[in-house]
Every structure is written in C-alpha cells, then in structure tokens.
Amino acid sequence: MTRKRVSFNQIVYKSAKMEQIIRTAQRIANSDMLVLITGEDGTGKETLAQAIHYASDRSAGRFVSVNCAALPDALLETELFGHEKGAFTGAVYSRKGKFEQAQGGSLFLDEIGEMSPTTQAKLLRVLEEDVAERIGGGEPIPVDVRIITASNQNLLQEVKEGRFRQDLYYRLKEVHLDITSLRERKDDIPVLVDHFIRIYNKQYHKNITGISDAALQFLMRHDWPGNVRELHHVIKCAVLMNDSQDMIWLEHIPLDIHLAESARKNEDSSETKADELLEILSLDEAEKRHILRILEFTRFNKSQAANILKISRPTLDRKIEKYQLHNIKVQEKMNA
Ligand SMILES: Nc1ncnc2c1ncn2[C@@H]1O[C@H](COP(=O)(O)OP(=O)(O)OP(=O)(O)O)[C@@H](O)[C@H]1O
Ligand SMILES: [Mg+2]
Image (cartoon, rainbow, N blue to C red; front, side):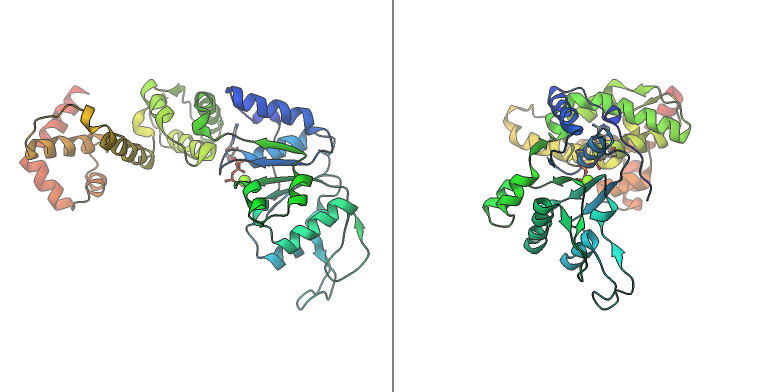
C-alpha cells in the first residue's frame, strides 16, 4: 500500500494541550529518540507517528506500520523478523521482515500492549544489539530502524500487572507523547471541522462554505468516544449528503450522533429531574408532540421515524391520522 506523506502541517489543532504535544514532537522528530504515543482510539496516534517520521532525516526511508493486535503471536514474529526458506512448513521462500523493510526508516508498532512476552523479549534484543534474526536461522542482520510505538491502553498499568516488561517499557518511552481525548480539548473541534470540510469539498467537488451555529454547538456538546476519527466521518458524511451547496445544517449530522446525544440528555435529565418544570400534559398530547418532533427530525421520512419510535409503519400512519399531523407537514411546505 502506498501511503501519503503526512507532515506536521496536516495536523490541525487550536488547543493549548495539542500545541504542547506537537511542539515536543517537532523538537524530537529529527533525533534517534524512541517515541511512545498513547491516547484513546482515533486521537491521531498514527498520524502523529507519520508526521514525526517525515520530519526526520529518515524520511527518505520507509514508514512501516504493524498492528501488534491484529496477528496471532507466531505470525507477528514472522511478520516482524521475516523467515528463511524452510524455517517452517510452508516457508517455501525466504522473506524479509518489517525490520528489514524499514531499514533506514521508521517502524511503527501499534497496540504494543498486545505483544506477547516472547515477542517482547525479542524486540528488546533488537533494541539492545541493533540486529534482527530471521526465523529459521541465518546471520543476524544489522538494523538501522527507529521504533515508534503506540498504545490505547495504560501501558504502565500493564507493566504493574506483569503483562508488559518494565525494561522494555522504559526503553520504548524515551519520549512519551500522550494525546488528549477530543472531549477534553473541544476547542479543536471548529478548526477540525473546517479542515475536513476543505478536504471533502475537494474530493466530492462540493462548495460547502461552513457550518451553521446550531450544528457546531451540537458537535461541541457531543462526547466523541471515537475522537477525531469519529468527527472526521461525521463531516465526511455531512459534506457528501449535502445538496444545499451552502452550509452544514443540523439535519446533515448523521442520525447516530443525534441519538447518542439524546440518550446522554435523557441520562442528564434523570439526574436533574427535581430542577425541571413539570409540563402538565395529557398522555395523548405528550405523544402527539413527541411524534411530531421525531417526524420533523427525520424530515417526515416515515419509515425512519417509525424505526426511531420503535412502532410499525401502519401504527405510525394511524397516529399521524389521529393527531392530524399531515396537516402540519402541508403547512410547513407552504411556509417554506
Ligand atoms: N489533529 C488532527 N488533524 C487532522 N486530522 C486528524 C488529527 N487527528 C486525527 N486526525 C484524523 O483522524 C483519523 C484518525 O487518526 P489516526 O488513525 O492517526 O488515529 P489513531 O489514534 O491511530 O486511531 P486508532 O487508535 O483507532 O488506530 C485520521 O483520519 C486522521 O487523519
Ligand atoms: Mg491507529
């Protein structure tokens, strides 16, 4: 797979927290310091690792990435170290491992916390002796590779609980960059939104000029469990789904974000019930208003509304009839 070169210019932020991280990363990029990057899923660990690689004098070499959680232990070892012909059944050819492929460049070991004790021991040996051996013997091969590791878990905790070697941990984290979750640096959201709008305007030949205040406020309230990757997908969808060719409005924000948000609101409101004003409504009136809200939200897409309300289409039709809700739609159209 060919990879795009990522530079620090493509990492977008405004928060002081990110600025601090990027400043440190830029300072150590062109050195042989080993870097450990931690952070939740989607916070930009691999992006930062690439920026560090391409800002270093190793940028002519390759940035090779291996996800340690994606392969069973024996396969991971073969992947990293390669093998000689005949090393095991099926090893018809000899094969270079990732250490050799990354010669002169950087090797990114993602989800390092998932690495087994045996592979951890082998990795430590590479770091101590600057050589790697293919599986099945052969000469030790000198390796000139900078290792950048990442983890979405608390690696120190893994060390304390005996699952990760302490000596290896301290070797790998000569520099530790801990990327803050997006919910703790929400001031990055507006610049990230603009950044992703620009990218997808270009890709989808659109001309979206920005985001409405209400839609941005809504994004600022969301918790972003999937961090920047989640925001990236939301804006990608919003641009793609947008026929208005002007702005991203609330209605372009994907349904699952709305649902997550209303679930959160429900949780909040059950805690603060005592503070709320009780609306004196009959059950019918409450039902009518709720159905109307959902119909408006789905822009009168009845199948979608029935889905959200967890009732059948015919039941929804009966209720629309009962509360005369189609008249409201007609009225809306006339006002539009
Ligand atoms: N500060 C940023 N500026 C621009 N794009 C960003 C930024 N942070 C993350 N991204 C984008 O968010 C997405 C996720 O980033 P990346 O894959 O680097 O995260 P990750 O921490 O490695 O995620 P995972 O733990 O899920 O592997 C990518 O599309 C990346 O381009
Ligand atoms: Mg990643």
